[in-house]
Amino acid sequence: AGLPDEGVKYGNIALKMSFANHAKGRRALATMQVGSNFISLSISDSASVHYNKALLIFRQLGDTLNVSNVYNNLGLIEYFNTNYNAALKYYLMSLKIKEERKDSAKLGWNYNAIGALYTKINNIEKSLFYLEKAAKLAKIRNNIRGYIESSGNIAGIYRDNGEYNKALSLYKDILSVTLKHEDETFLAETYNNIALVYFSQKKFDLSMMYYNKSLAVSLRQSNQRVTAFAYIGLARNYRNIGKPGEALAKAYEALAVSKKLKIEDVIQSSYMELYRNYKPVNSDSALYYFEKNIESRAAGLEENNKAEMVKMEERFENEKKLAINTINYSKAIELEKERSKNQKTISWFFILVVILVSVFLFVIY
Image 1 (cartoon, helix red, strand yellow):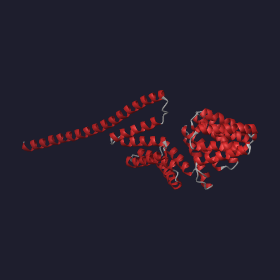
Image 2 (spheres, helix red, strand yellow):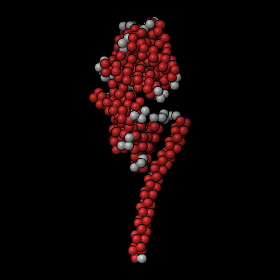
Image 3 (spheres, rainbow, N blue to C red):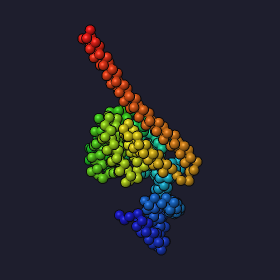
Image 4 (cartoon, helix red, strand yellow):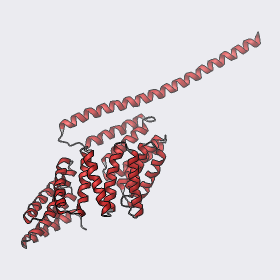
């Protein structure tokens, strides 16, 4: 397969040929392919233009299958642009066509995508409804990867709602299916998800065991995204069991990998882990990484959203003040402990002097 920009070039060649041959169907498919290559290049406006051109031709041809596929692609663009309600509209339009066609081979993808979108807009009831339909259909069709993906999304909802036993049961079922079929595609993610549930339950030994399993598989697969999540998970565990040195080392590993891949949520989590671990021992480093976390979060805001930027800057300033106060409070506690310790030493010294003087006077008299 060529690079995405090569795909645009060859897609355009195919497009010109289809015009020459007056082949509408091929023209629509070539137009849709050019759109897909623009998505790969993260040029969503151009992708949308080509998808809508293809959609017009497919409608004229009465090609409902490809009309449905274009709706999915348009939904994907809206999803990437975080326009979740718009994405949902396209996915539901696509689903309606697939249900009318009784296209069970393609229904699962839509059920899963719609379920995941309902999670994004906090409609958990509808999310579970569609995800369970996706998981059930995948099991009937023996679609292992489809079952793992849908079930994983359901387990994630349970985990986020604090239903840890339900989540753990489902994740372990996914792990069993994965190992049974010797398909390691989702193995690192599954280990990572189990580790996260155990961490939420404060079962740090079990959490670390599964994070290390996730790390081993992700390194072997060169899956750097999961590697970054495993490192940050281990950093949190080490901090919670009182091993700040190991926690710092893992946080630095997470930061290095996430910066390379530009995974903003892990970058921010890494900065916060470094802040939390430095806070008791090095106030300057703690404050530095807290400020880096704020910078990273601010960079994620849209530049043209001035009102939101002002609100966020105010919030960040308040968070920074709180962090400084917390650091100063920690330092004050340490100083108080040291002062108390010194005071006790002085008190014992005076008591000892009094005893010695008393003994001396007793011997004299």
